[in-house]
Length: 564
Image 1: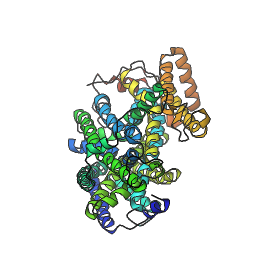
Image 2: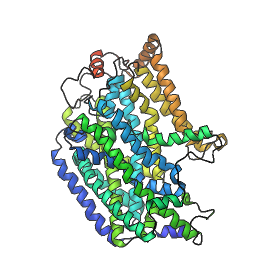
Image 3: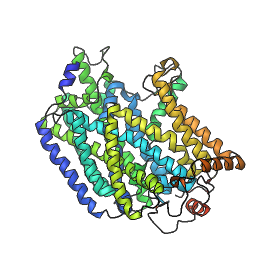
Image 4: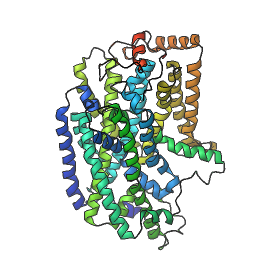
């Protein structure tokens, strides 16, 4: 497809689609505003009062990942690089994240009764690291939300007859309105509606596309001989396997220490619902995600046929990676009837709205509860709800502005997850499972992981002589995330096993440098508990840390909180 042809597919008015999409967006807005009637406190806004039914918890966690990166990004990556490319990260890594979260993180984190995930870091390691974790999470959300907004721009440019920037701005404003008003109640119940629409519409699309192309799902995989394996072009097989595992880890463990999965899990009625909600959502996600991957293979076959004189398999020199994610939309528009096309766009918009609303909420809450509130201790708790709503709007505006820095949805999402992984995964995991984990070790790990990944990413983008790939993901033919994760792990272990006197010296230095600021001071009542009942003996970390008081960088000494 020529550049001119690709441009012609954009900024066009699709009357059937827009006639459905506008009422559908209005329905989402109405559902969100109706659900908002239950939002009266900060706990309602963040965690829906911990009153969400099991089915809503499942659909909310399912919809969290099923956004632009799955419907557009994964299908495009399947068309461009096949089963061994970025689709390893999403959908397979994303499904792995939900399952791992359900098995190892949901119940112990639910039982802490914290309002935000950063409250766990604050309890376990002290207020400094609670603030740092909120900053890292917020930066990650900026990238993730930008990816969703780009997806909305791709869709609206092909249906509304407006530039991507205008369409994405309108959709972002709609999401802001119902998220601002209803918080998690609005997000969860709109995601419940959107998840049902996603699955039903994708099934209809799959049947239609399969019938028109005479190509079933299994036949499409066989046709292109797709298998999941490390990069066959990399001579060093050890590096190839490490890079393959890194793709699994991008979302597989990178999204574990994120506020959006935490807030959805923590909105369940009890810990069992939280755990099994994540497990069921993970299984449902990987099953539903096979349909966008199927569309990607169909798009590859059609693109090859259109550009290779009908030879879909023997074409040389055709590079789909030169195109954007809209190739999937263009392909499906050419294959399906107008009615089914409307159905597909309904699924697509539903998926993106559900993911974007959750990330906006998560970032807004972290900014308010874990950054603004500690910095302004005189602000009464009664103002937190309003502050969280305002922070959500501010964050959404910044995320929209950030979309102008890049174009690939999957790049934004992958970098976002890696940022969380290298900065927060080790402190969260060791904080739950290793009694000797300390604040010094966690601080070393956060700083080393985030700083090393940033430096390595920039070097890999600009120094191809050292094995950089020009995209920031490979250095010396090894994924930059792998380098950063190993450095962060080493820093955590080293810091936690340092002699007590050395850790005390680090603690004192941090107090002198930052402890004078209200933002980093340990104050009673700084952490909001969603359940004021005393924690069980197995959850000793909260009680010990609260009793310790002391410095702003208090060393963690409590036993692991794991309780199944």
